[in-house]
Amino acid sequence: MAKKDSVKQELIGGLNEDLNLELEAVLRYLYHSSTATSLLGHELRELVKEDIAGELNHAIFLADKINALGGDVKINVGMPKRVRSAKQMMEMNIKAERKAVANYAVRIDQAEAFGDRGLVIRLEDILAEETDHAEDLERLKR
Ligand SMILES: [Fe+2]
Ligand SMILES: [Fe+2]
Image (cartoon, rainbow, N blue to C red; front, side, top):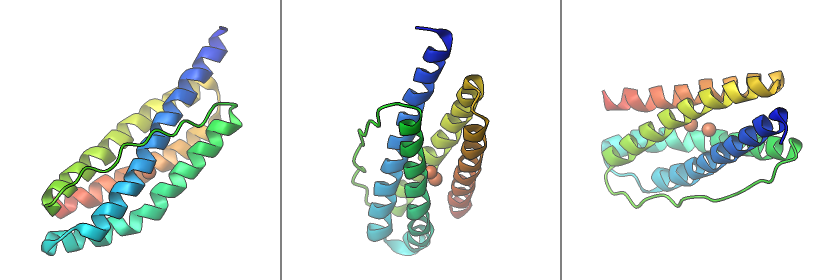
């Protein structure tokens, strides 16, 4: 395989990983927004409900991009864990948002190596949004 091809395949593999994390976020936020209890849970519900559409838009963008690159869209989504306390939900969401930020940083490097400036810009926007999500959740914790 030529160098350019392997760079592209790695990028597509990474985008599929991102796609599945976004879909997991949609399901987790739907679950948390409908089941969180307590005062903290009330705040959490408001916050994550707002983010469901945004995470879905990220997933739509990624799936379209994978296809545009000639890759296979591979959906392999983990179901949200059953959680009772709002505090646990919050910890779980903070961890997932921070993981998304770290993954997108890697993806931006890969998109740069592949030479797709448009994708770099889109991924930077998504990374900034995930950072906002993480910070909003972390603020609830303080
Ligand atoms: Fe997202
Ligand atoms: Fe997010």
